[in-house]
Image (tube, rainbow, N blue to C red):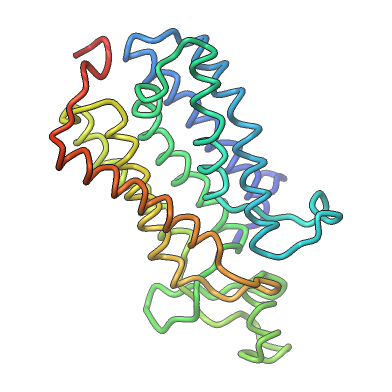
Length: 260
């Protein structure tokens, strides 16, 4: 656990770096598909505030925080960003005369990189920790960390313990999960049969793995219900059913980009 690096909060440092890397990768990927990079950058700038707001609203909903404390109680949930993006992205893209499905396909690999880099910040910060485990790769966190505070509150350790119980490094699981999904998307992209198929696979794999890995999450104080897992489940279900419907119907759209 290293909550501060170079004098900065590790969580904010890595998520800021992740967003910057994601934007660079996405703009370049969109440019390679023959779309104007400036308009693409404007589109990402328009969507980003709504994505961030979505993560906050999902956290507030999950933790049962009163709206009066919404600006003072920290925390984010990534499925909220996906929901918010899916709502605002199509009209914003059409306003800028960009094809939404082509842009979403181009962005999918960059989104996996963003998640993988950002999750390292979660690990260093000690948040998004997993349940106690006896596995050899379990990680014990020091005093005053979220896992230590949670374990102490639940009577799993004594107040004078040096560290928390070893827990699943859930944030690193999410990071590795992003890398594996990235490799699949890079392989699948040239084989896609219609616009939007790459993003649908991203949504299915990312949200499906998110829902599965949530079973390894440790108990956080104040959590009423793991609603992030529920959001991920429904997003994965919609993506999966759409992929199945397209496959059964033999659907095949026109060229996915100017390169095809």
